[in-house]
Length: 321
Ligand SMILES: Nc1ncnc2c1ncn2[C@@H]1O[C@H](COP(=O)(O)OP(=O)(O)OP(=O)(O)O)[C@@H](O)[C@H]1O
Image 1 (tube, protein in one colour):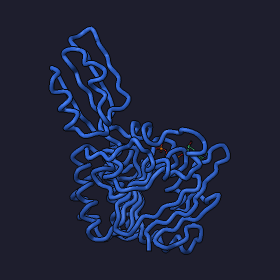
Image 2 (cartoon, protein in one colour):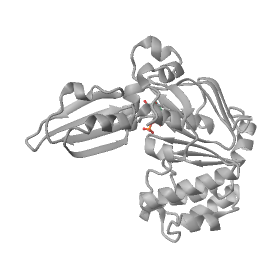
Image 3 (tube, rainbow, N blue to C red):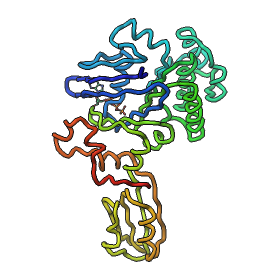
Image 4 (cartoon, rainbow, N blue to C red):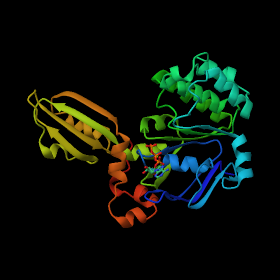
């Protein structure tokens, strides 16, 4: 049985079709990232899964339970941890009072252990909390009843890098114990460290579901180079170079920026004969991935149920970068 199953899920707000025939499943024990730019429809899917919104069409199942059936939803929620984008804690309550409330609602099997990892100042009122502290308290409330499935809406956006790292390690360990994690994000680097698979949603439509490695392979790298002299155009006509931009500024030399989905060794070999001041090769930002591989190139492709538009992109290449 899948931990999460969506079948033709559609949510029409009237002016906006926020989820349009979304179908996918998250297997038990999987860490699944739900990616998309702002306004893509991630929160709508999550709120529907939690029974806060009723779908216009389609079905959603949590741990085998139909979320539109109240008693089934309740059964699923006992085994679920949920961390919303904004947990909405009572501003006048202390962190400890929030924990006590959550413990009385759903039980507390492991808050002591969690507080060693994520340590919000429990005696302070929530209104004095920084964004990071709210996030830490949110993580404790999400995991304290030892759920089988957690749904996290942009979980680490308020955490500093050290805590993000701690969160990642924690989630990986929990996965070993069988936990299923579904989390939304618009940050590819966050997702790549953690996820087994990703689903990408854009304008309400699912454009792909695939292992994170294949997404990264196809998304390529973002290359910037600063050459001492201008590089002839044909010298950069290498397999996998896309969208090259150059700038000969008032300073020394010429700067180039492009997305690269080819073999890095071939690129370095081609550049060897030019004198470079600087060279950086970074992971392509998610926005770039969207633009390159999932662009709206006509209504029929968009209506062609996403996956084809994503995985069928020929020039995405067999990159081993
Ligand atoms: N209650 C609502 N009524 C009308 N439109 C809504 C409502 N909630 C969301 N929308 C719209 O539906 C679309 C999807 O919104 P949603 O919040 O699901 O996206 P998201 O991917 O979670 O975005 P973000 O990353 O910014 O949180 C957006 O265009 C949003 O403006």
